[in-house]
Image (tube, rainbow, N blue to C red; front, side):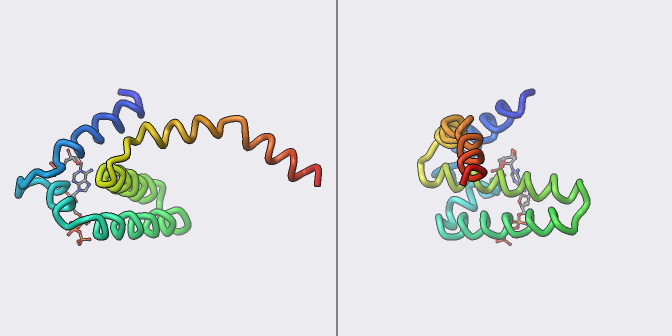
Length: 107
Ligand SMILES: N=c1c2ncn([C@@H]3O[C@H](COP(=O)(O)OP(=O)(O)OP(=O)(O)O)[C@@H](O)[C@H]3O)c2ncn1[C@@H]1O[C@H](COP(=O)(O)O)[C@@H](O)[C@H]1O
């Protein structure tokens, strides 16, 4: 499966948990706790990813990065934003950084 397919499938599962009261669903429980808690999780996972990037093993970093992406998708879903908007934003930036880097060098 491609990386994009994994993300799309995970986002679809996350969306299906919105409004669900399934007690055995981790994502449904997180939605029930609300935006602030979800945002807090994104922040925590971001810090843990950064720490793993500095002092963890490759596997630590992979695990923390997965936790970060997972919680980021939940935050986007909570806000009603499709990750496609993020991919489109990244796509729109393609090629622009080269121009910016060159402009910086020319200063
Ligand atoms: N990627 C994950 C995933 N990663 C971790 N976890 C669960 O997260 C829980 C641990 O979370 P934390 O360490 O943040 O502890 P916590 O007590 O929940 O949070 P705190 O309030 O303590 O911060 C465990 O129960 C893990 O099983 C996940 N639960 C679900 N997913 C994905 O989400 C999908 C839907 O999950 P459900 O909603 O549970 O069906 C699954 O099919 C998976 O693809």
